[in-house]
Image 1 (cartoon, rainbow, N blue to C red):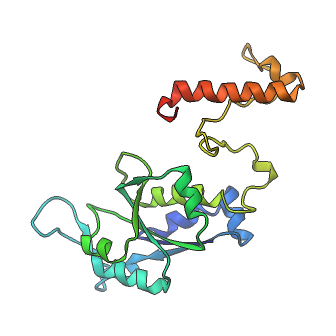
Image 2: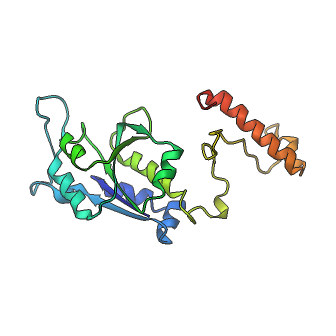
Image 3: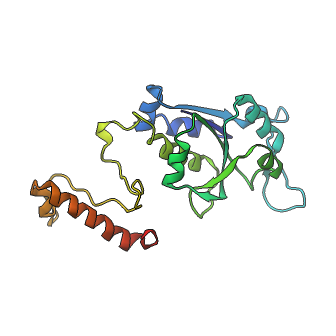
Length: 222
């Protein structure tokens, strides 16, 4: 799968996708990260990609021409996702849907926003990672890349079976608690059922813990 990222800071994208599971997936050819530097398409020799907003107001607005030219340079008809707090919140179901695509174009905003005309012209949908505002779209793009990539065949190996599977089931329950050695730490002991070797009882306990956790931490999911 190819992730094209329209960004002012390509080094942020490359640095954060070059390590751990994502880095291995890149090296093994399971995913491809293609950051496109919007500044390479600046309107003048000074590297200008932003300007003051029409109508006045604080801050600067990312200009449409550099973003559009950067987009056209990709030469793809893939869906364009604008990382924006105005978008629908990213969910596990959405990540699963996106994982079926061969390539995705991610647009990272900055400053006070992007000229509305570029959003109208190229953006397929807007996605948010939560109801808060970031300094730029790159962290949100990285979250989306991670959430989608781990769903692709082969990206998670056996050693990553510990990955939290909250939200992965049809019932949207949070995952049960995990324990490993030592059996006692600071006076806290591993639940006896996990040491019993009785797989049926263990599965029942884990399911009950998932329900309990979801009820306490995320009752909106029940």
